[in-house]
Length: 506
Ligand code: C2E
Ligand code: CA
Ligand code: CA
View 1 (spheres, rainbow, N blue to C red):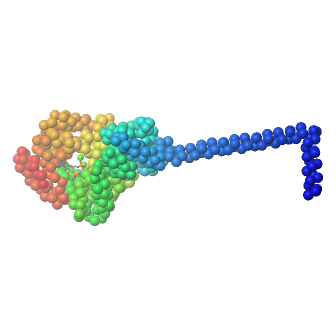
View 2 (cartoon, rainbow, N blue to C red; view 1 turned 30 degrees about the horizontal axis):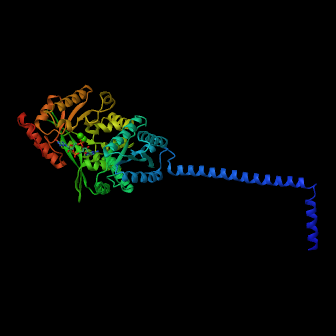
View 3 (cartoon, helix red, strand yellow; view 1 turned 90 degrees about the horizontal axis):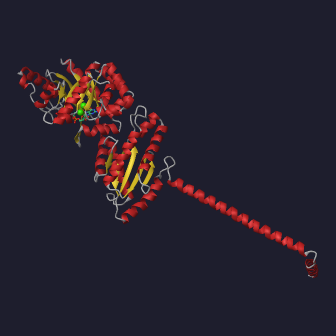
C-alpha cells in the first residue's frame, strides 16, 4: 500500500508540472480526433451497407415479381397485385376483364424452328399486350407462353375487343416469318370479375377453361367463359380418352357418299366420311371427334386407317366392275404436315393395288393456307405421283386467285353454305358463278357439295359446274348400301332423262 501511494503521488507531481501539460493536451486532442474518426467511418460503412442491402432487397423483390424474359410481372407478382386490384374494384362495385392468352402450338414451333424463335414469339406477345393496355392494368407471364391480364373497369365486350386486338396484332406481326409454319397465332380465354364473383382462383379457372375451349375449337381465336364449361370439358375429356381405343375396339367405320357427273349423270366417285359409334355415347359426329383426334395426335393413326379402308373399298368396287371410280378421303392439317405422310399414301396405294389416279385427297381451303411451305410441298409431291387434290369447303377461306395458282390442286369443292341458297339468293348465285369462273380459268374441275334438290343440280349444271354430291343423290352410305344404291342409280338412268335425279335420299 505504501508503494502504491508513492507511485500515485509521483505521477500527480509529474502531471501537474508545467512542462508536461501542453504535451498532455496534445495527446488528449489526438485521442479525441481518433475516436471521432473511427465513429464517423463506422457510420459511413454502416450507411453504405444499409443502402446496398436496400438496393439488393429491391432488386430481389423486383426479380421475385418480375419475369426476366418479357419484363412483365411473373406469376407471383400477378397473384399479389391482382388480388389487391380485384378487392378495390369490388369495393367500387366496378367490373373488370380477366384474360389468359397463349401461343398456339408453341411446342411444335420450338421443336421445329428452335427455342430461340419460340422465345422471340413469347417476348413479342408480351410486348404487344403490354403496349396495348393501360398503365393501371395488370399484365403478367403466368407460365411458359401464357400471359394473364386484368383490365380495370372493362366490360365483357370491351375485354373481347381487346383480346381480338392482341390476337390479330400478334398474328400480323409474325406474317410468314416462321419457316414452314405459316403464321404463328395465339388464343385467348376471357372472363369478367362479376362472372367470377371477384374470386381470383375462380377467375383463373374460368379463363383457363375458356382458353382450352378456344384451343379445341381450332385455336387462333378468343372464347368467353360460359357457365357449365367445366361439365362440357369433362365430357370432352372422356370422349378424348375413349377415342384412343376407338380404332382397336372397331368403333370407327366409314360411309361413302356418291359423287355424280352433272352432265352425264354418271357415278364418278365417292367421298369417304368417318363415323364413330360408341357403346354409351352413341354416334359421335365427325365434326366433334375429328378436332379431338387432331388435338391429341390420334388423327394420324385414324386418318391412316381411313385411307387404307377407303382404298380397300375402292379395290372392291373396281373388282365389281366400276373401274373408273375414284375415292375421296379427307386429310387433316396434321396429316399434311406429318413428314411420313407421302410414304403412308404410297404404301396404302400399293397395299390395296390402287393406282394414284383412283385417290382424291380433300384438303380444306383454310388448311392449305395455314399449313405453310411444308403443306404445299407435300401437296406438290402427292400431285407429282398422280394423286389428285381437291380444295374442300372452297369459298370459306378467302383464297386469292394468285394464291390458288401456287397450289397444286385439281378440284375446287364449293362449300355447302353457298349451294344451300341456290338459285333464289342473288349473293349465292354470284358467289357460285365467281368460284366456277375462277376455277375454270385455272383449269380446275368444280364439284358442288350439299346439293339437296333438283333445282340446285340443274342450276349448277347451267353454270358449267362439272360434279355434284349431296342428299339429292344420296346420303353417305355403308359399303353394302352403296352397292345397292349403284344398282338403283343405274336403273334410274335407264328411264327417261327427266327422272334421272330421283331424289334418292337413302
Ligand atoms: P366435309 O368434308 O365438308 O363433308 C361433307 C359433310 O356434309 C358430311 O358431313 C356430309 O355428310 C354432309 N353432307 C353431304 N351432303 C349433304 C347435304 O346435301 N346436305 C347437308 N346438310 N349435309 C350434307 P359429316 O359426314 O358429318 O362430316 C363433317 C365433316 O367432318 C366433314 O366435312 C369433314 O370436315 C370431317 N370429316 C368427316 N370424315 C372425316 C375423315 O375421315 N377425316 C377428316 N380429316 N375429316 C373428316
Ligand atoms: Ca370433304
Ligand atoms: Ca365441305
